[in-house]
Image (tube, rainbow, N blue to C red; front, side, top):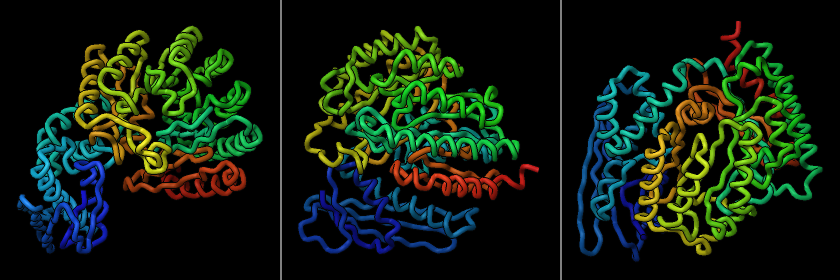
Length: 501
């Protein structure tokens, strides 16, 4: 679909135009200069002043002409940044309604293309707005459907049941520890992850830097008397390293971090079944870690081969039972909707196999074509299901989890996600991941340690977010981990110093 847009000179609108168009059409090109071979022309008039904003949009092709308009008052808005956000929302509103009428497709998430929709609802509730008013505003301002608002409300209520003090954790932190190695790289993956085979030298030097970061950050947290809420070992696959290396890493955690025995939750991603061994599970149990992920993604062997996961379906099941035998009491499993070659029937089979195991929590992802992934670079090679099939698969997941008493407790979305759907974490009561809630709702600082680990510093007073990322490449990380540790501590000092007296 080739769309010629008139009347939009401000480049800050260009990305929202592309993202919303992608919700409706598989391949979209947007032009801002005259395009003779266009499929659609959309002409905008945007008029705003200090009081209000009004947007008129006219869409036409060879046969159809549609006109929409929308306006909004700037009541209570004082900053230029917030005013522009309102202008962009009104503009997106008109654009979306034009395309919805033209295509006949209703976007259940409305104009939202961001990652964290539930954060919007949390913010309104924190401001003292009633649930009914908040829902009405989400419906009116963002065009979100009742179905998705109900899902958001359910998740927000679950989160506040799980973490009643969610809005009061700004003066604590969580820790993310990134291990950037995997047995192989999956075709859909863009995480900093390197095939571990033959790279033991890189692993050794990387772990030296990680231990240094843990010691220095731990020392600072102890000195400032700042508590840790959760610790999450991710990657990559943290169980790619040896049992001995894992043992030393958790020993370092207990030695360096403050009051580890009272940390609310420690999770280790063991996502690739081909990295799990009895020795590694013994190490986890030794250090009182029993929340892990073992991720099948699919129970179709041809799919696993196509996406570069070099383990068998049988191995997933064997390692799950081994983890149970070794005392793992809180196991999460990830499934992905829309993997290449899979439709409703294949996904139903995967759900039926999951029923034989019944993990404590289940995260249902919808495939996203991430910009840097192998799958996106060679899109023609990976045939995926239609939008209708993707929606049907999500409906199957919702029915299955409800039938087996799993409740949704966190949600996030991604750019280029199939069917404009979402990723939802489901859990049995009391088995939810607190870290997943903290990372999604952005209520506290999360310090990232390790190669490719991203930190998100949240000002305890203003809520302003500052991002900071360690290098993704192990060599660059090994050359500069001391510098990056110092920079993180300087940011922490600025955020927390006045609150630690």
